[in-house]
Image 1 (cartoon, one colour):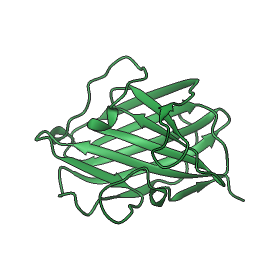
Image 2 (image 1 turned 90 degrees about the vertical axis):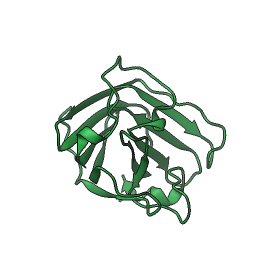
Image 3 (image 1 turned 180 degrees about the vertical axis):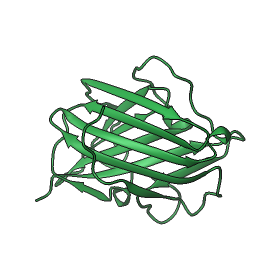
Length: 179
């Protein structure tokens, strides 16, 4: 999956989340001819988080209930957006929305390949996504971390005021394809 990636972006922990075993999260994304390529990285005590076991790569709902990564892709000039959930297990999900959390449905995907590797101090996930993705677009790169005690942390490029809300346009802090 070695496509050239843009610079890694540092994600921030939501202010209502307590510090936990993960001390740093970074992510990068770049458009490709068939969709996009993304990379996410956790640094910290990987042995103290829930890492879903390797599984068959297939569309699976509710990945966001435990450790996973997310991409929100919103073409400029509209309210429609696409959400990708990417699990370290290699399972994935894709949803389309007409507007903020409105009319959720399965999004069209040709293929998603997810590869994950980790050791005691780092976890890296790479995903190649083949899906129709319009440019220019605003992108959110997010992560959910569940520790072994069931505590959840939310990481994003930016957050709106209040509770963690990855669907907010505030989180879409990366511009792709703009001149």
